[in-house]
Length: 210
Image (tube, rainbow, N blue to C red; front, side):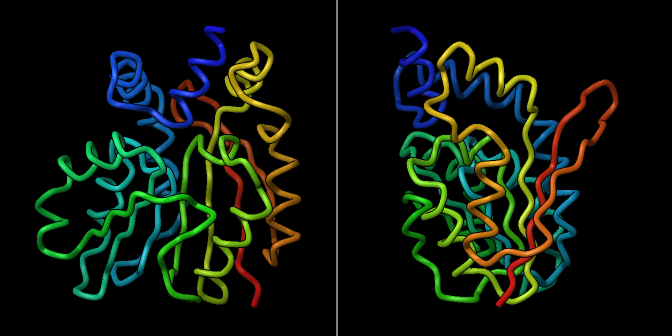
């Protein structure tokens, strides 16, 4: 029972004591991954960038600093209304000036135009999606030809969560997500081991082929 409740809050934090604790956990656990995901995405000053499952907004905050040209635009989506509100508060000045746009929505139904995004990044996110193929197809739809998608995870930790049944099914396996990306039209799909100080993590890359 506890594992199911933890999994529910990790995938969809709510405004509750459990949701607040999960938000604190995400800030601590994800910060290094978020910052490295942004770095690996190769964001250019004038890019349109999308983060999926932005959580409390740490990755958005890092990415926004790189979008120094007037055309640079940052978009964030999250299925949790609580996380959407937290990120909205954290980035309220950037939202107010139009540099950042946040959407409370499902990754399988992004409110974005076709071929409108240069870079997509996300962190510890895909294994909470009910349908990997729908999510991957929607990401591919909104990306410009040749656009890069990067996601990161700590595979050892994810596998441990899965063993305790905190994560549902087999979607946590990187191979499942990489297969969905290829089926959706991505090319050069690969996973690499990365190191940041004493932390080992994995990065999955995919290029939108159109």
